[in-house]
Image (cartoon, rainbow, N blue to C red):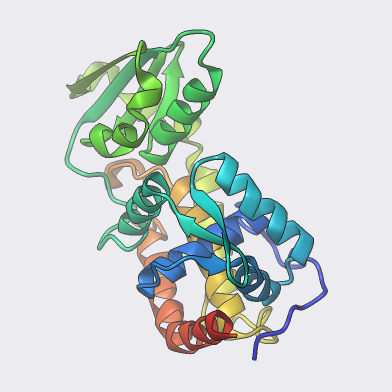
Length: 283
């Protein structure tokens, strides 16, 4: 039986990726629910119990659930046993896109060669759409290199990034190009500053320290809690790594080691964690 742990979210271990917020842990729980094939609405008490495994306070979980309703990821309804929540169509699409990236065979490699360039104009009265557009571009690996010009390595999938918010972009202008840089004017000279490669390396090293075979910081937690924390940390790492071509990174780039660690630890935790999640649903 799952009980609520009345302690704060685990912030006592290094978390340079900012991945341990209650919202990110809730997204991790929703992702696991989706992978488990659970499509029926779940009670708020189920999420309270599940996130309680990682030390999230019940009131915080309720607030984050309601926030995801406002943001359009969840719908809320009154069921026979209390308030229930389920993923909306856009919420399911978002989680599927995130999971596809997180579970990709090479999650830190660019897709194809060259670069994808994007410039956009969003009406001033659509500030929320502009923020979501920037967030979607960031997830796809884009960074702003000049005023109004965003660049991503390889052949970024703009359709996957922007289709979920197509209605919000009505009246906006998004223009994209494929390009190859010229040898004398390459991005190589500014890549380290533009993408903060050393910060990404540090994030990989910290991830390995937290989740490698010798790590013990979270041995006192259940597999369900560890799986959510692992998912949140991995998502943050995937967001942090620039997915640059290997020529920009050097032979000792730690992405392959991080990927091996993630897959090994996930396999270690998953069965027990999903059993525990199902137990919370049945309560």
